[in-house]
Image (cartoon, rainbow, N blue to C red; front, side, top):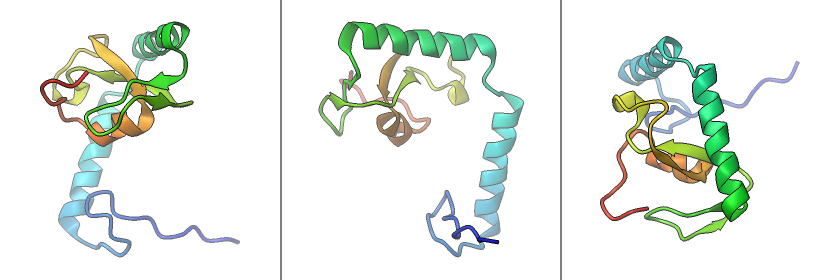
Length: 114
């Protein structure tokens, strides 16, 4: 039976992290997501926003403060105010590639960015 490679700690990115504080943070993240899973209206809203963007602009990520616009086959909806910080799940946002959305995490965009 094949074994899976060791996974990096999502906090410090080390393969052999045994820090109990890091494990507690990961458990807290999972608990928060379990309390607020994506619901059908939110999934539908995000899908509609991405679909409208693709119809108007094509499969192009407008970029962020680190990268210029580029083509992408994996576009997602990025909330202006992250839901984890009290933002409205059906509130305003923008369409960006998954990489740009993940890079931002749950932080707010810098002033002057798209």
